[in-house]
Length: 277
Image 1 (tube, rainbow, N blue to C red):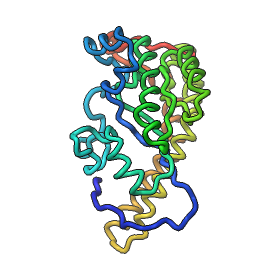
Image 2: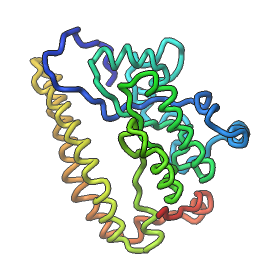
Image 3: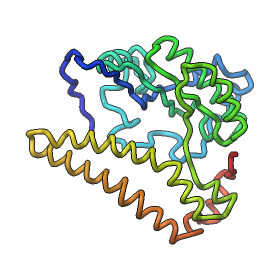
Image 4: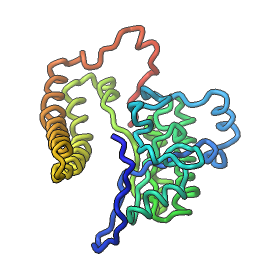
């Protein structure tokens, strides 16, 4: 649902700080250029990115909300949401009184999950430099995350050590998967258990936030809005508890090796997966 009605201007009486924990800056290849060697810049211009993830190109969200963004978040310069610092500052940081925002860059230019591990290493390092030079140095309220080439555990650890001394970085940003663990161990039970252990708290925390936001609509005097808030809150609560915490792991335990089955023609197309340790 896209809402363009802006909140009423008001002064903040509370002394509590507001921290946006999931701010998505759009890092462009033009911003990455000064931090890439001629070799990798030429490679990008010739071959582009080849990410492992599905829907790597185009919008991986419903067309009714491209980039999962508000309709009024597209900057006047014609760029994509999150690409214009001045517009982000005016529309989000200043307007809502955000004290700090933690950046989690999701664009292809960060190299996350690229099939070419060496390119992923170069892009991850450049993405961290861009966050500092183009965002944090110009707007101190924005705090960068350490982007790592998570397909290579050694390179990821090296990037973390490289950035750890800079106190501007506040977290390590990476995705979690369990497929590689099954490929290495062949233990379905352990793989499913690890998946729940690594993602359970994240999913539960995110679901709790969404439940609280949806429940706020239940306080409305408009019956339709109230019904929407109650329905969405209940649906999210059931999904995070009954479905994700009980039904999904139980079904994966029963299915065993069939969780990881794929037709032979698809296995030939997919890039080889390996465990990063």
